[in-house]
Image (cartoon, rainbow, N blue to C red):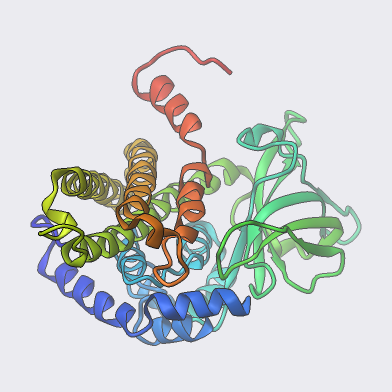
Length: 388
């Protein structure tokens, strides 16, 4: 599934990642989930090939590419049946924020490790009572006037991979000395920091990465735990959220492609009457429609990645939201149609599609719901009044 608008370099990268992903495949992913562990072997091998840090600056051990290359890698791994969820979080969100806004020391401390796979970072923004309203985030950071340390207090939910991540990039709020209003800031919180507690959330979701609730109980951090400039918090936050949406689109497109591939393979071989079931339009047309929807979503994802990598944050914001919306819808449709094509076999462990029904729904919900994207487009793009 290649696109004519891709450069020769991107086509070569896509082919290489596809071949690499097939060495692991769905069986490896299913086994990792069953064992309840992070896919460390796949992660480390991807790092050796330079895939994890492809979007990070060369001077800090990265590949010097962008989100276009990283999203391509995640899509192809997903299409091979072995997606790496933490690619969205560690290099795309956290790596991007630190590369763009971190201090020189933060870049030296974190980016080489994120690029070579020896360090992983999680990301905590969602709160139990805030949901999609980031203005209601209650995790607060205050300065200790004596030591200059930061003291964080609050809660986060649905944070992936905290149990094996070396640190979590936490979105908190500090008080603006001039206005007294709370403003967003980002902090690097190492995993074993005193007062930084985690509790797994019991999910009906087949994924190698567990979800956690975090409690920050007067977590004391040094002054240099603050990422970049205290006054650029909102800009820094959105610099991480656009890549998150683009990468989520890649995750969904890869998942949809994998499901569609299994369904097409089955439809070619399964014969009930005289011809394979794929000869019947009732089977063939919905699969063709799923392919069209996935291809359109990918084009929007590529546009969003191009705008982001070109430095157009405003244009990328609109395109990234649209890409995430389109990819989630295409993924849900493709997975549902794949299960339907296989009939009863679509619900067996042997074919491994049933568990993807829940996973596909996640792409509609996280990291931002489809309704909030529609709010964004109606307000920001169409200029309609806000309802909230």
